[in-house]
Image (cartoon, rainbow, N blue to C red):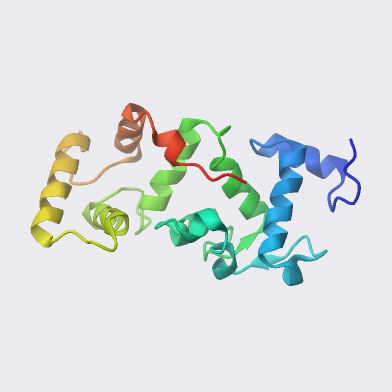
Length: 184
């Protein structure tokens, strides 16, 4: 197969391929990208954990208003710091090959700022703030937007979106999978 100087055995590559939406070649490419973020730290240390600040240097994360949330959701320690396996999982979920349902599950977790398994008004406000920065909405426009959002999507009228309600919105969105993507 010509893996040459790979830091991974054939069995490890097969495991990564089985656990992600990547081929073995893409796994090795992902490792190169991870290593490029901090070559002095990763080097030959396959267990290196990079701080969130380093992960956020990845071009697509650097410009993403949810970059810090993405890192925290995929971080096995939940602090934003990522091992290669965390990074690989992140890149896999954001790949074109990942199913829409998997992307929706992770998007929900990214938007659930308070971690209560619901997208409440506070979560939705933070999502809108991040999407509209630097020109934030005034309070009246924010209230109107949140009210319209909940009227449309909050099917059980409890003032928050459950994962099922969020998923229902995502199913109607034809471009969700295209926008929830990071290329290696």
